[in-house]
Structure formats: C-alpha cells, structure tokens
Length: 108
Image (tube, rainbow, N blue to C red; front, top):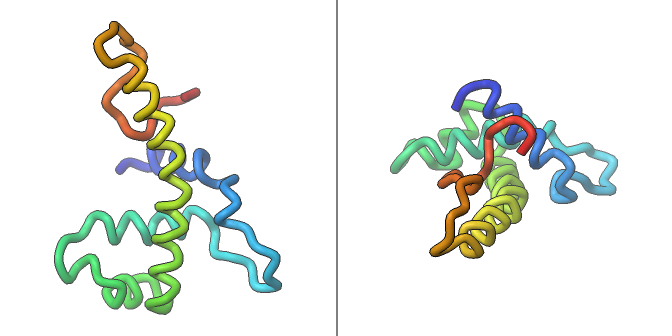
C-alpha cells in the first residue's frame, strides 16, 4: 500500500468510536493501529503471529490483538456500504461502482 492510500484509509476510519475511550490512558494514534493491523494482514503463517508484531512494534501481544480488532471493526462498515452498492447495481449498469471494497480514490 502506498503512502497516499494509507493516509486515505486512516482518514476514513479515524473518527470511528472504536478508537476513543474515557480512559486516562489514551489509545495509540489511529495510523499506528492501522499499520500494526496491516502488518499482520500482509504476513502469512508465523509471520502474522502477534509475537512477531510484538517484537517489531515494541508493544504487547494483547495490544497487537486490540489494534487489529479495532481496525477490523472500523473497516467493516466501509466494506458493508460498498457491498450494498454492488448488490443494488447487480444486473444493471453502474459504472461508478468499482470492485474495491474500500474506495481509495480522493473524494470518495
């Protein structure tokens, strides 16, 4: 994923309530949580293990799991809206609906 696509995903999910809490200890920035989750998504087998991410990012195993869970929860509503749009257009001409699950183009 290139930098501009990464930044667009951060902007799409940054306001999701899953990234905010009433704790005196603030959560890590959304960009870091996304980076940790993408690192796990991009590795297969033992490379996707929380212990690998723990060493790479300097965070605990539970934190790796928390970041990944939050990112997935923030991304799911975006993919559901895109899937609904494709379903509505099924069998019709809808050139504005691409195959992307999350639109990475500007202004979308």
